[in-house]
Length: 457
Image (cartoon, rainbow, N blue to C red; front, side):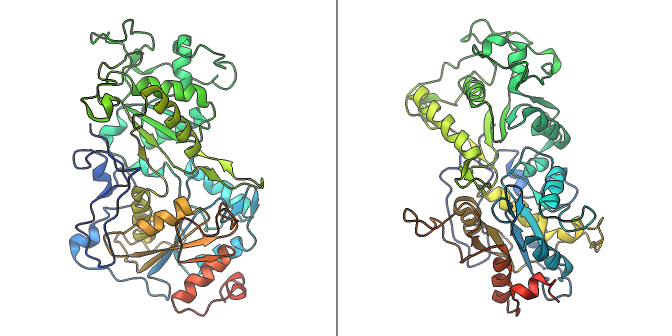
């Protein structure tokens, strides 16, 4: 199976004159045409709320929009640093959301956070913003970094995957709910064979939760790491999914390394192609090893603590450093989800196009099953590297314009070291309320903070 960054896609079919060709040197790996993942850019499988994203282009027409003044615009909100910091909601965020909800505007919450079920994030956001659980303001609108995996093809979900994150057992339960029935955690491996990690493996504390390996497979079946004659019970891993913010970097890096140097993903083996200069990437990751997926690339994120905290991207940088040392400078090949990957923006865009169908089970639902066209989507975020870059570089095939707005309440703060963000937004504003006011004024609507915080009355 070829490696492919889900954010990569062809732009030559785009019809809008504003679309330009852009490359993603970090994410674009391998050929997209032969991968079952690439099909997910054309439509999401096993997802109740979304239809194929090319429905508009195939029909050649745009369905009529809902008949209100806000029907052809939408919003995508980052969460941490935009709607709250730590446990505290940003002042005015609650009232603003109630206001745009009352106007039947389309919006989603697009976060690089993960590790929980979407419903858990809905409950957390509802509580932090001081909303009532029965208010239809948050539910069915949260997209986590790993939510797009719900739409992966069944043939991928049937594979054996290694999954790790802040709480690997929780991540596994969510993956099971997504359809990944053969999910393994690092804890499973060290309980099956303690030799895998020769240090204190914390099997009674941090790694106490585990399950037997699927189908009676063994973590210690391999005796000769270079032998191609493998026992039938040898464990083979097909995909590595770094769900979110791993806690035990040492164990996770060791296990991921072992699989990436293996022969075709069999635990305990070593590929004889490693280091061969005649092969691409000096032979590393050229022997059918499992694909490595990183759910998001955020190096830092914002909490109530005054200094930014490391995120999943920091774990990736540590893994890349170890990999470079082991391979003497070979490139670590991996695939990325989350912002700024184009796949994640594709997923969010389709959710917005199918918004009214998604909401049909709530009080706002119209019961429609078609897609509703958009003119502009405003991405409101606090991180130039993910929120702003992703929106700036996203060119949906239906010609919708994505406009980035940066707020000053989160990751990015003007300083002597960084007078301007690396990826420049359309505008920088003080907070999320000002962001909505700016966007509505950009649409010719006479909006103000007081008007918005009063419910837009």
